[in-house]
Image 1: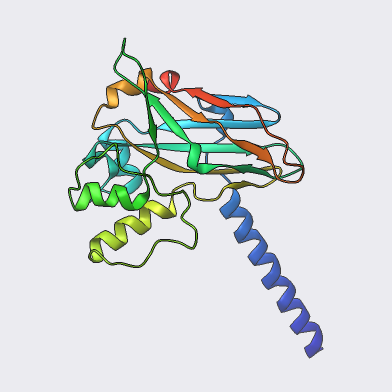
Image 2: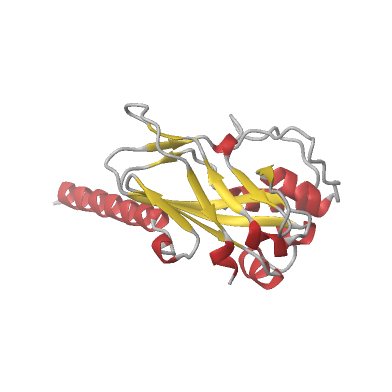
Length: 218
């Protein structure tokens, strides 16, 4: 009897763990309902740019947000309806943005640590500075810049899209950050680009994804 109870307890624990993991894997938003998206080869990529201070506060809290430093946060959803995993080269993700009527400029994503520097340390924007890879291999070197900075950068990284693997038949989502120097009105003339993807098993490349963000600004 005691042995049966032990096995029952172990079984319930396993089911509870699986349920929790399943809940974490679920996306709170159906990406097919978002206005800014691109879809082909059974992969849907949708982009949801955050454009107002109120929305940033609702998502990141009232104390500090990327909006304070003029940084655009884009929540990106990827729904892989294939039976095999897909790998994304996060280093090549970019935003093409410009004032209406002007030629678009390509911006690389900035890391959560760079966002924290801009917001809390008032680090000036330097478009010539080399970008660190996303995600950073082995994590970020531990060099504290204060408790507030540590907490903010950790929060930013926890919600960023840091995994380069899209599991089969699953949806993942997370943020990319771009320093647009407070030009949120330019987002209507911008495009999010995801140029480098491949199926992991056979290394077959997927076609280029480009998402016009204008529909998400109306």
